[in-house]
Image (cartoon, rainbow, N blue to C red; front, side):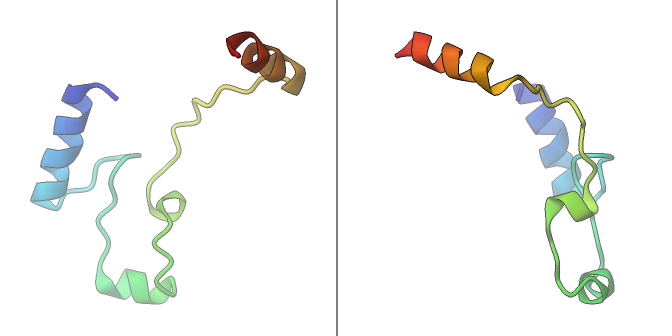
Length: 66
């Protein structure tokens, strides 16, 4: 993660402000209502930019690196 992105997230955290998809600010009541499930996937969105490959491609790349 680039330093500038870290600075933006840290500044939002210190201010107690939510940052869409990165940082959620919830109340104690919200935490209680969710049975204190503080999983990031519950409160902050996923960016959906994961890369998926076939297992054989992943294995061959790992073996090449050995």
